[in-house]
Image (tube, rainbow, N blue to C red; front, side, top):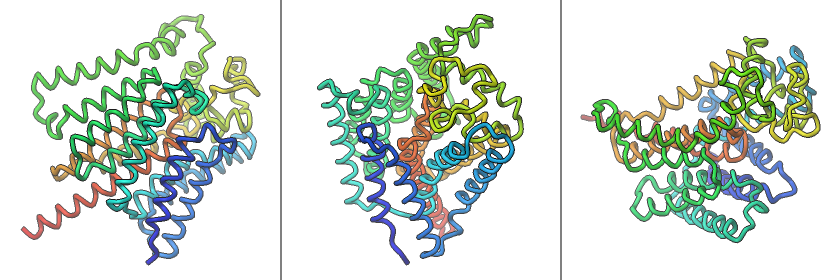
Length: 409
């Protein structure tokens, strides 16, 4: 039996520091892709050395689906260059490779490794605060939006490493780590912060089964708070731009809004399997090779989507699902339904409750960020997908132990 724990642990820390935290400072910005390839090689070693191929059925299925879309994009739709298509193929696979490595490989962080990660995340958060307050935030992290993303990633890692014996001190440190994200001044971070406070301090499993007026009021208040802190962006990108106003004079200066507005048209014209990889609303569709679709739908004149100057071509995630058609969209949401079923509590124990809340926080983070960002396909997305893999695996272990105990009774 080949032990891969230390190698995986090293790659996890490397992804956090090089792939996420210092990524924007590096001249070489393919570090997360290389680390993901190393994780994939680790899977191969586990499969061949430990004969654990049965554990990777989900990853094999996703690779099979993506290989189909790769061939479909190369030989059927022809909207971009082969280089761009292959680039998008790997980018789309990255978060799923990270997830299945953590979920299927069976690696475990021991107590000393978890303690080190807690100290490391607290240190990185404190350093980020010092850098931001000193006025060097944009030089180090490129954009204020990353303050919120990185704070949430550090918060989630600390949460996972402390859930087994979480103390009041841990909760205070977690909130302080998360609070650094307020410097992002982004409504999506404010929305996540409200959700985090609710799940950490108000929500209890089972409370929705016996919902009383007080709980309904509390949930309504939380929803209104999330809507309130996010309203500025909702109005800016969707209402003021004319998307939902019915106006014929839509403001075409909003690249993100245009990507949302055009996505249904792209989907309806390529209903079954979509427009293919590297064709729409992805980094590869503009920065690696320029997709012909932008000219076909007359959005190649939009600032931020111009050929050779398209910094906002991957400024969101959900519109890119038009690349995959109703088949791909169905599979995407099936994956998240499967994830939710896996994190649901079947045995009410303190550990299970903590894992369930952590799983919900990750789902909320991915959903909120996908509305107005492409975090899911970046190194930050790979990090949270690894944590999600840990959560599902640990929850499965708890449920199995509970089943064994019930049989003995």
